[in-house]
Image 1: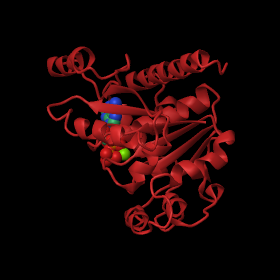
Image 2 (image 1 turned 180 degrees about the vertical axis):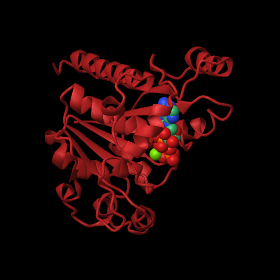
Image 3 (image 1 turned 135 degrees about the vertical axis):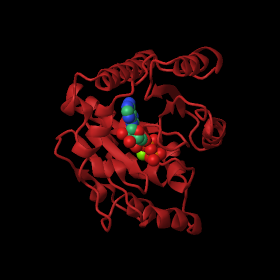
Image 4 (image 1 turned 45 degrees about the horizontal axis):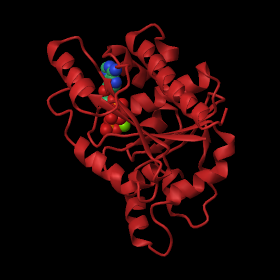
Length: 263
Ligand SMILES: Nc1ncnc2c1ncn2[C@@H]1O[C@H](COP(=O)(O)OP(=O)(O)OP(=O)(O)O)[C@@H](O)[C@H]1O
Ligand SMILES: [Mg+2]
């Protein structure tokens, strides 16, 4: 199982939309078994896949209950190949409890829990909150890859330096953590966007995916419909782009596996 963390400390950049759509594409178009983990107290990923319960168990208990059995917190969705570990507002307390309880490891709880179920899944996609807290740290320690959606505007780079500092810190616990790349979201064909994207590609020094996810109102419609773009509007620009992004990422994983002699 490969764990990819979708993260940006900035809010509203398309983390959740990317997580839920990539999960759907990996599962329904590529036949991969996917576990989605909602690491955000807002529970948007859980809501999207219809498994949000404000009083229910989920990531909070997984991170705080001693000897938690991860299987207990995995929810099935209407898609055979997509399961979700949901989150709700109780994650606020979980973050405090993890900090208080230093009688056992604090940063490796998710990683340890996922080891148990790793053989059952091809991918685990983690939708992070726009925040650094104990849940985010656990997600980064458990991750193989980090993907960073960027909405290109004047504030695009806010938080990026802090995020990369955080990734460096996390490497103490997780030395093989890889920044798979940044990708533009809500991309428009105007000069500000083009300049921002050109800077990211040519001057920033950050690894960038070729694919940019275009801006379309179809995306917002899917949040009401609770359907992935692939189901709701497969011909729209963003649906095409997410298919391409998924292809780029899977090709990257395939290349790496070949280089390591795993296939
Ligand atoms: N490609 C797109 N085109 C148009 N709107 C989009 C696109 N991607 C995301 N959005 C819209 O932007 C808003 C924020 O998206 P999303 O919830 O995925 O961001 P987020 O980074 O997860 O936010 P948060 O930090 O609050 O968790 C949503 O209303 C969503 O519909
Ligand atoms: Mg989100």
